[in-house]
Length: 405
Ligand SMILES: Nc1nc2c(ncn2[C@@H]2O[C@H](COP(=O)(O)OP(=O)(O)O)[C@@H](O)[C@H]2O)c(=O)[nH]1
Ligand SMILES: [Mg+2]
Image (cartoon, rainbow, N blue to C red):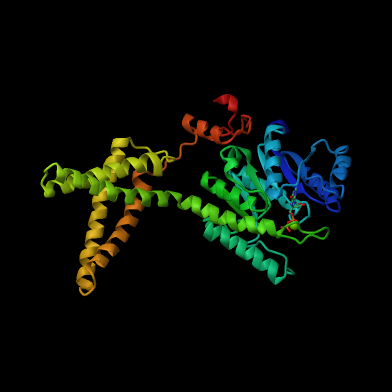
């Protein structure tokens, strides 16, 4: 029975956790006895000067499912990335957990998170901010504000609106999802990793589930959250914002360039002796075509669309006509409503709704991204992004192997 069960690796990063680690390992092992899965623990210790690793080595004599890896102290995120890679390549994990060593996350909650994975989720968050979850009652104002603003920044700056607890560190993740994430693009070392990974999971279309947990304050040792973590966190949320606005910025640049294409062709046709009433629509259409090509091959090049290029071109043209209609009706409406202000302002305020409608329709209709996880093209994309050796597993068809391609 256990041979076919999912292999689960609980990754526990440690830095100076001498007073916690042994008890945590023992509690987890007791918990594992109640679970049908093949459970492992991987401690990622960054050569803690307090001798944490020596304690883990002692425990290894009792528990064959206990793994230890060392490394340079590069931050919490760097430790998790190393640990996840090891869990995937060397332990062939189907699922990994993120868990703190200091008992802030209860070992008794491990089966609850795992059962959500069994029910089909890709990414389960032990959440302090959904109904039923909690933070310690004795947290001071500063700690509360830190946690509150951190979460708000992740939700409303980085754009992970749908998740209540973006900074949680107690999570279960399918490794098939990790294989779809480009870790080189996360660019984080410290605690910001939690938000960066969640953002990447949302972008990869992961099925995410939050379940309530009570977060408990550590009894032994100190928090390792430092100023550099906070600074990196702030930079990271803005970086993520910029990344998600990149398409809109490119779309705007292409639109602005279209104006020059339009005027350039118009002038060219006039110098060729063409009548201006004929030259104008030709120049407009040529600018629409050039905008379409730039948007197709640059702005939205990452999107996998279902239509052929000529159908997309047709849709783009239709959207342009609609945009013209929206901008023109706004212009006419404003001209009648505010006859005393400069007509340039009517024209300008007509462009704004036109451009928004143009972007939204092209983004969600012309260049709509269609998910097709099983296609060969996707497999190639996934493996190009992830150089981790994901091994193919029977119970998860999405789990890819480099050798499969
Ligand atoms: N390997 C490793 N573990 C770390 C590092 N920083 C923090 N940790 C561990 O990550 C977990 C969470 O850290 P903690 O200091 O409790 O953070 P807090 O709960 O936000 O105050 C603990 O198990 C720490 O020992 C690091 O740089 N490297
Ligand atoms: Mg802690």
